[in-house]
Amino acid sequence: MLRTFSITVILVILSFTSQAQFSDSTTNASNTKTSNTKGDPFALLSLFKGNPGRAALYSGVIPGAGQFYNKKYWKIPIVLAAEGAAINFLVQRSRSFRYWNQGLADMASGSITEFEGRDSPEQVKEVRDSRMQLRDYAIMGLVAVHIFQMAEAFVNRHLIEFDVSDDLSLSIRQNPNMVGLTLGLEF
Image (cartoon, rainbow, N blue to C red; front, side, top):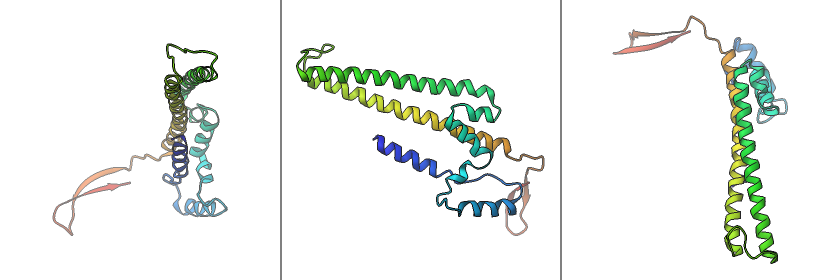
């Protein structure tokens, strides 16, 4: 299950090859084509070029650094709290798993006959297996929190650079070629 989750995470990361709007489409389109063909067949390295990619890279290395780069200082404590809670949850689940694993090993070796009210190794193994599953879920949760904060920094940087001008307008007009109305978006 952890292997399937890891493969899914890798595929999601590799799918981040789309780009937002450009200020000069002819210059940027030619740069994009040359950067993708220079030995990066999946265009993964192009994700970390420019400001949004840099924000995601910073957040990937140090949690909250992408938010700092985006000058969204109020988000840093939220990111650190989420990462800290996920790490704390993982540490607790790992300790519980090791505790029950040691109890199972002691029962299997015959040094104890009862562990936490369970008197057979099969009962202890069931609890140990459930603790192992909870530990694995905690690992996936930590990875999910980390990827989420990276994606948040990436998207936030895109929105900072997004051009929103006063020229955007939505109008309803009559279409001379057809019967009915047409919605027109001008920018």
